[in-house]
Amino acid sequence: MYIRSYARGLFGVRLVQIVLMMLASVFGAAPVAAQESSASHEDHAGQDMSQIAREASGTSWLPDESPMFAVHTASGPWLLMFHENAFVQYLNESGPRGGDQLGSINWIMGMAQRIVGSGRLGLRAMLSTEPASIRGCGYPDLLASGEQCDGQKIHDQQHPHDLFMELAGFYTAPIGRALHWQVYGGPTGEPALGPVAYPHRLSAMPNPLAPITHHWLDSTHVSFGVVTGGIYGAKWKAETSAFNGREPDEHRTDFDFGALDSVSGRVWFLPTGRVALQISAGHLKEAEVDEAGTSRTDVNRITASATYHMPYGPAGMWASTVAWGRNSEADHASNAFLVETAVNPNHRDVWFGRFEITGKTAHDLALPGDEAFTVSKIQGGYTRYFSAWRGFQPGLGAGLSLGIVPESLKSTYGSRANPGVALYMTLRPAVMPAEGRGAAAAGAGAMVMVQTSLDPARLTCSKPVDRDTAAKTVYEGKTYYFCSEADRDRFLTDPKMSLSMMPAK
Image 1: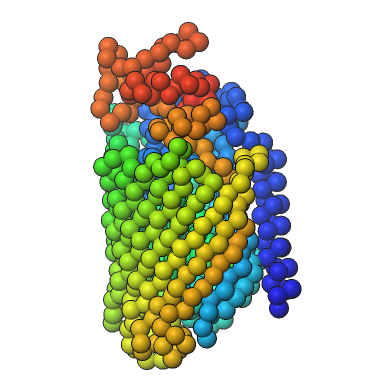
Image 2 (image 1 turned 90 degrees about the vertical axis):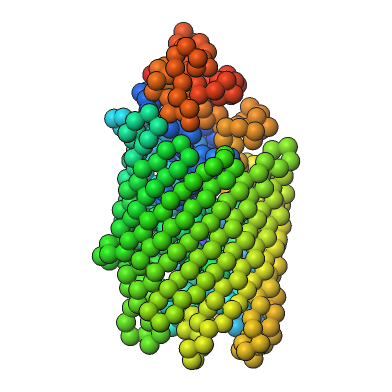
């Protein structure tokens, strides 16, 4: 059994390597600092390029002060970005409902953006080899629940992601000086519901395990069919989606299309560059199989979350997320609460922790009866990342967990508190900080993302500027305007970099 699971884990890792090499050959995968773009003088009027740093899964937002773990390059008018997070892990969860497994949890994402007309067009593809690198119905994750496999409710395991996690595109354009509209959609994507999905949260990035509150907060991040429209300003966004809210089946390599008869709405507010707040609600049509296992039931979901990013150490970040979710079905409702954090003082030593408490029914845990239980889980761990090579950073880490159940479940789980352990190797892109304190600390290798324009009236700043008062500089015979003197100074640290990322005419 161990030989077979080991082989499957290596197979998944090999698939990741193959995809990495294919993308590297297409994109010339090297940090954008080494590239010069022929798009340096494309029209970039009216673009709120500061939004790129905050963009996360789907149309969700992170705080503006968010380092970007990505490889970037430019090809003509296209800005190309590559993200990934891959683990080769051994997991052991104790107790009668626990288990152990060697496998690979992973995802890879390619993005391409360019100016089209007065707006910005973006294309995304996000894939996972977990259908091949995670055996059976999922990997051990005590007290996790959600979806079905082989006609049974998945419990105490986290199901593997689908091969096609996202195939979507977006277009965003200005309405006025401080207002933009956006449309997003595709055959696989994420509707406007919940916080940033956990694979994309900085507070969750070093932790290989999915939260046990996943199906109360962000489980719709893989939806087979979604269309989202919204408007946003400098510090807020309001958006709504029509999507297929049915859970994917256990066949992870196909498309589980359905009617776009689920709806959601979400509001974002970023009061400062370090904070992102959201509240959302959705009606998920036929989302889950009912307790009798014969038909599907609707779910009404409400979520609220706060994410805080604080610069920490000489070039690091302390990222934390607090989230609450509530699922209401025809005959019952349950709540979930999550707190997670990751402290990263130098992008090499990362400590992480997570606490969750949620209500789960006997049906959620594949038990007889209709009783509801309050369960919780505590996790903590450490990852040591090593020197980057060609833009990627390998690491080694370990985590400990403790699944806690009420007295009434003691006989089922063997104990009220069941420990677990995770040992893993990991690979991610090296950090390329966005503008701000992190970029200055990172030095010449930092990605300089500064909004600039030859016409100050076309800048989308939080406070409008005019030609007489705007910060400006002359570069290669042209006068460039900025939202602030700090932006101008960042631009001057590497003008070619900034113009290749945010071309101006």
